[in-house]
Length: 270
Image (cartoon, rainbow, N blue to C red; front, side, top):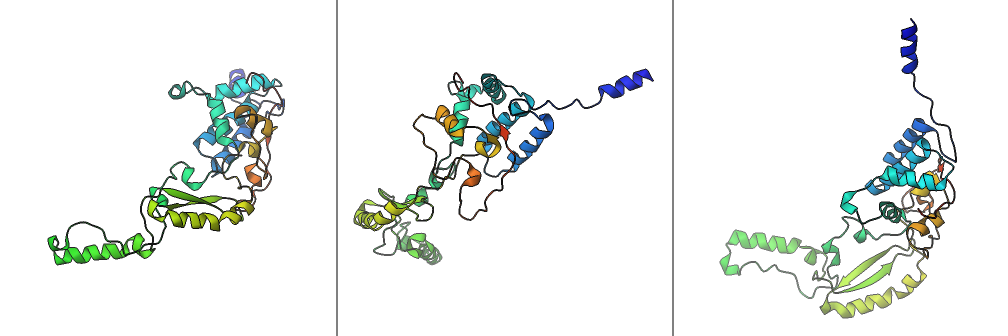
């Protein structure tokens, strides 16, 4: 009977670590935050790596020492031999720095078709495949159909490789896009540049659309932390550093949620 009681006792779940220095809570808190992080569509692989490591350190390794907390964070993130000359923590912080990233600068966002000249066509586009006399009648009809459906004819644009670009800032968000023109249409580029000049000057600061996830889950002096891990002259966006607070068009505001607290200070040597 005594042995059975001893076995039952050893199988009981140990108590979670107590909150200390703004963290603690153990497995339950970490599971809750991990679930939120994985359900956050804004978090990519690098963001999740930093968010999960920070949540783990605060909940499972609570401490009153800032330096110890940052050492634990570096250990939790781990070392990647493929980037042996890169400070992984700084790289992850830079990735989470609140900023605006244009669509064509996002990973996988580069599209050569968006860098073609949008100047007007002077004559219909015809693909030069073979001379008409070298093609059978069905081949000529098929080629004429392809030419008629080509975007250069349907949109009446030049479509040549762009050499000159004009920046246009959107009035409501400050987000921008580039308009490309080839060498032949450089006069159109100058005309469009003059047309959008007043609009660009009146456009607001771009609403951030990247980074800013750390402040959504953890409480700290994030302006100082971002400056420490990026550069001293970095200035936060006028919309704040929390991605939850940014007025992204077409998206509902994110309700306030519980956040873990980092140990304040202690940036020296981390």
